[in-house]
Each structure stands twice: as C-alpha cells, then as structure tokens.
Length: 216
Image (cartoon, rainbow, N blue to C red):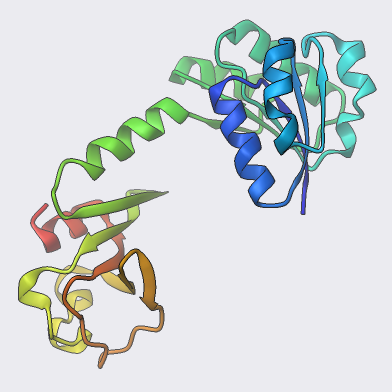
C-alpha cells in the first residue's frame, strides 16, 4: 500500500482516484473545485479544496510524507507546471505529471516532475493499434519498441503445440499465456502446450516481429 497525493480531479484525475481505490492505496485528493472534490470522496482517504499553486497550502499537506505525488491537472498547464515545481521544492519524493505535448513534458521534467504521462497520446496509440486489425484484443507498450499483444489464435495454429509452431525461432516472438472467455487458462507455457480453438494468446516481442508473425 502506498500513500499518494493526487492533484487535479477532472476526468483523468477522477479515474486515477477510482483505480487507486480498487488497488487499496491511501489517497489524498486535491482540487480547487468543490464539486470535483465531492465527486471523488467515496474513492479517497481524504480530500481538500485548495489551490495547488499556493506554497503554504501545499506545505501544510506534508508532501514529504507521500510516496508519490501525481499532478493530473489538464486544463491549465501553468498551474500544472507551478504545482510540480513547488512539490519538488517542498521535498516530494516522486512527482508524476500529466502532459499533452512533448514541449509540456520538457518543461515539466525541467521544473520538478520526475516522470511524465501522456494520457491522450497513450490512449490514441492504443486505439489505433487495437482497432487496426480484427485479431488484436489488447496491447501494452513496454518501451524500446517491445510490446505485449493479446491476439486471437490463428485458425492454422489451433490444435498445434508451441513446439510445432516454434514462433520464437522463426519470428523472435514469445508466447506468454493463453486466455479463454477473457480469463487466463494457461500461464505456464511449454513446448507441449497445445493451442485450443476460440482462445487468445499473449505474445511478447518487438512490434515489427509481432506484426510480421501475425500478418498485422
């Protein structure tokens, strides 16, 4: 369990609060809008109405005591930048900030943010890849061009074993798990594992190798 300071409770911030609640983390939520604060009260440990660009207000929160400070402000970049800078000045252990463009990320990283997330850009990439093929069910980017894809088992693969297909040798692609009806059916994959029909597989590799392997 981690203690997290979440600043900015728009749609992105609210979804973060809800997910952190499901993961059983302790969350202090901050926004200058009373309605937004009230909306997340069921999902957070505590919440306050306040201006995150006010040094006295932030200092009173004891930002040093939080494992992570997330700046999820999306409608005012100046406030996001000032907040990230103040958090670091006040001794925050880790500051994660939201950015919409590369130039915003550069400013945030230079002025307090330890890491930057691009929710719109990341979702756009996921949507483009997910719906560019009828056979892709999910996609997770891992950096340096590697990714995990959830892909429907090709008809020509049904009933064959991992050893028979030998996609690792031919395509540098690793089959990690098998899912059926949306649930993991097999997570220990051996050369003798047989691929059932109406199933999906989680595969790891570079995007180019995976696209080549599955003709995406």
